[in-house]
Length: 374
Ligand code: ARG
Image 1: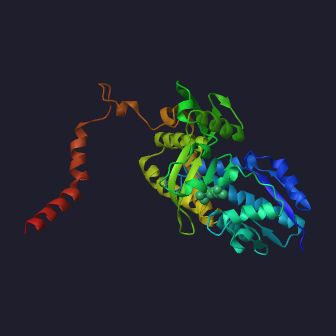
Image 2: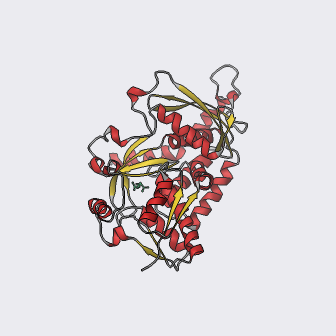
Image 3: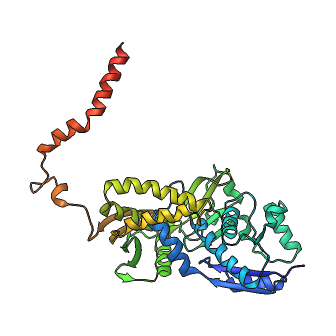
């Protein structure tokens, strides 16, 4: 029989983390590690994802996905320190998390064996709950109709009634986002200051990275913002219905994208859009440690040098909308954009521009027109 050492990594899941350690010892673990990785999570995982405007399939801010390589790296650290021959996790064989954990663990230490009981014993969710009961492992049954994963960047809710994609999620699925009939009748405005693509202050007050995220989760959630309900393509090929609460993530990515539009050129924006979606795909698919992710980060970081400024967002009854932005690197030129008399834009050159710009389209269109007539 092997000795078991358990590890809990605090990524802001706001569970009773002390109790998890006690429970582990009760059922036979010889040692338990509780590792606070909140700051590292925000600085090294969440912030890069803001710079990459990371939304998988244009919707999901990767809240669960981003935490996995960090948790896996902490587990490997402990395994190496303790001289473990194997690490075990509780993921099933259907999801993305097994991929994320195992690719990271195997990349960091190819000698570690990975044990995945839920997958290897082919346990269903009901069977897992039964197994826990049979073996005196305490679990919260009220919560267990849903499978929840949460951290600072969001809350993922799966299973139970959510498995039918045609059924609206019941109110009890949500914890972070207030129902609209309980939100304020007055709009809330927040001002977010960015430096090199990451948020550093809210409403003029500089805050620590972890505090910025929790603060925004709280005010946006209070205004009914943050629910995502979409059909997601998992790495293993399954389509699934996924429901999330990500108030801070949605507001921050929207604000960041908006500021980028003020300071980056059209060419940069077009290209970055492609890079951003590749970045989100790699991270979703468990390839955090792939060299391509570092390559994409190098490009992204170079663009972020100028992403400094302030973005003002209006929060009201489930809506978030950028209503103002400013930057010392702004490329917006009032003298060019104005329709007023003061405009410096020489309209007389537009006619010639249109002649040349449209030339290939005109030539092709008239050729096709002639062919059709034949
Ligand atoms: N579909 C999401 C992802 O792949 C969420 C997974 C959530 N895990 C859970 N145990 N509920 O990142």
